[in-house]
Amino acid sequence: MVSRDTLAGAALAHDRSGHSLEAVSPRYGEKIIKGVLGICAALSVATTIAIVVSLVGPALQFFGTVAPFDFLFGTSWSPSFQPQSFGVLPLVAGTVSVVLWGLLAAIPLGLGAAIYLSEYAPGGVRKVVKPILEVLEGVPTVAFGFFAFSFLTPLLQDHWPGIFGQEPNIFNAGAAGLAIGLLIVPIVASISQDAMSAVPQGLRTGAYALGASRMRVSLRVVFPAALSGIVAAIVLGVSRAIGETMVVLMAAGNSPNLNITFTESIQAMTAYIGVTATGDIATGTIEYDTIFAVGLLLFAMTLSMNALSIRLVRRYRQVYE
Image (cartoon, rainbow, N blue to C red; front, side, top):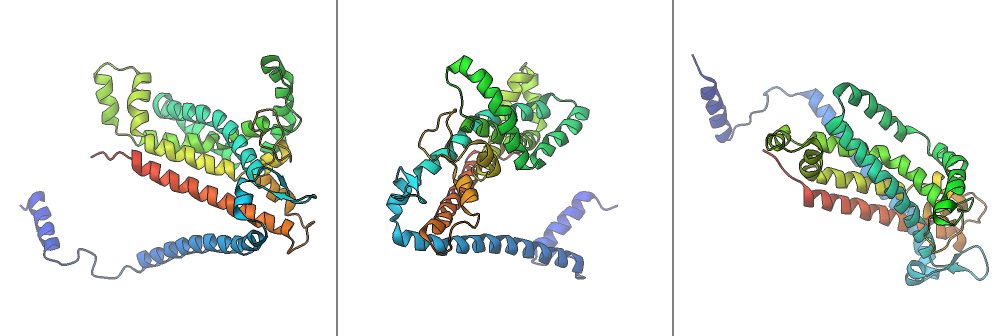
């Protein structure tokens, strides 16, 4: 009787001899699937290239009139009023403001939900709670914007002055940031929970054998082991928050300024694009070209965040045998 080790050794010898271990007869189904997947990847790359090309042309026309240094570091933004100013820093500050307040809400809620689902929740609860949490990601962003304007803003106006002494404006960065935080909680929670669930059970078992509590195992063993996935989830949430339009358009206002406080009205980059690209501005004018310049900068910021995510994932990735 031929043993399993003998068969494995024969297969290995056959492989080392240079012969292919693939099936002799062609598998047309696999070739078709491979071709379809290749086409999908090519379409994704082509779409990205097309977006860049559509932005670069008008943006170059804009920078032929406005110096890139004045655009990137100017502190006044009023392209539609005289005298015109094209300093984009107020829009960048508004975008950073809502992203900052959103992360302050999303990171604790998202990571708390991920730790609970991964380490504490019974299997039946996890099967119910996680799909419900992910459904939140599919809610239209205009609904979040209306929620921020009609519920969060009055709530802040009722309770914020008693705590900090300043009543938020009817349009404010705080309400928009909190709504964006709720919007990206499913991203942070779902990806982080998947990363924590992928940590080998042996690490948990070893920690429990040494007398560690469940909380200590969660925070001292599982969390560091899943850090690369958690970092990727947070950076992906940041990219999602940077590109959000309807929430900031409805709740944060359209007042470009460098003030990133919780209670002030701001204008984010996406909100400016959404307000300006409505057909009221003549094509070919410098006001029209500002849309593409801001869009190109927004694309560069998102691309940088994705590149940072890849670098951080590689930096903190842990491989287990």
